[in-house]
Amino acid sequence: MLTALRNPHFRLLWLGTLSAFVGFNTSNIVQSLVAFQLTSKNYSVGLVVFARGFAQLLLATPTTNLLVIPIHQHLRRLQSGKLRRPGVVRVIEQAS
Image (cartoon, rainbow, N blue to C red; front, side, top):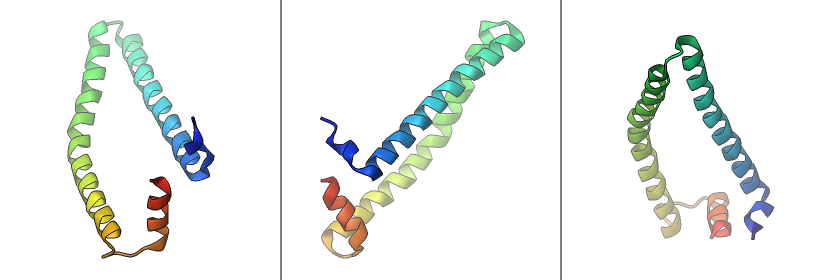
């Protein structure tokens, strides 16, 4: 069932992603608690959550488009043989 976790590189990636996810969500909770403790108003909590979500939406959308498209183009070049990097090709073949 969890055969992918036998690969040490994937396991490291998975654990790093999990810890980042836990830290990110913990910071959401802590920021909301601090806003409520400072002001004792639910409105402040909503404002903090909205501001954080809006900033993520504003900053993440262009970055995602800029990163995803070149990666797919690079992978196509690797698979077509126009760009040869043995280490990268080996990783792609092992992943599939």
